[in-house]
Amino acid sequence: MAQTDHYIHSDEIHPIDIVESVATHHEWDFDRLADDQIAMVVEGQWRSYSITLAWSAREEVLRLICTFDMDPPEERLPELYETLNLANDQVWDGGFTFWAEQKLMVWRYGLVLAGDTIAAPEQIDQMICNALLGCERFYPSFQLAAWGNASPAAALDIALSEAYGRA
Image 1: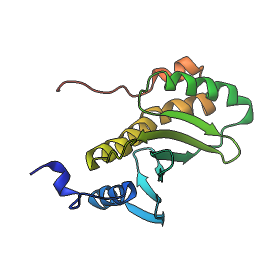
Image 2: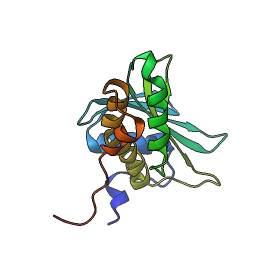
Image 3: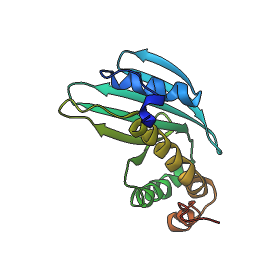
Image 4: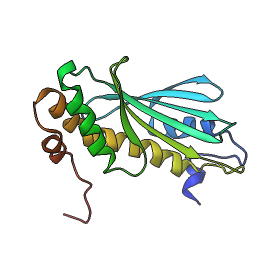
């Protein structure tokens, strides 16, 4: 039995239905905001992360936005933005931005599903998990840059690296 069979039991399914299935599988609280949008809150090690996924049929893109509150001192914004740039250089599958007006740190990613491509539940699960891992990995760096008076390079030095191999 394919791993997909654990999540989905239909051949034709909307991408947000797949997201809902993944969220149910992980026992994450979610709210189906519309046919093409779902929101959930996932507890991480450092904080709670708000995740929204939306499907755009016109662009054929499943967009993920993962946010967490951050209200850095105004005078530290240049260091925070430089730290964001350095962090984005280390990731392949999304990127960070800071929405100053909303005081939100944001991870964004778009999964292109052009030509009637159907996303596998494993793909969506990995997309959500990668967003959470990225936020967890760089959260301490953003905190250090904003409140620890560290240089962006020094702040990024504490970012948790991915582990390879076995202990």
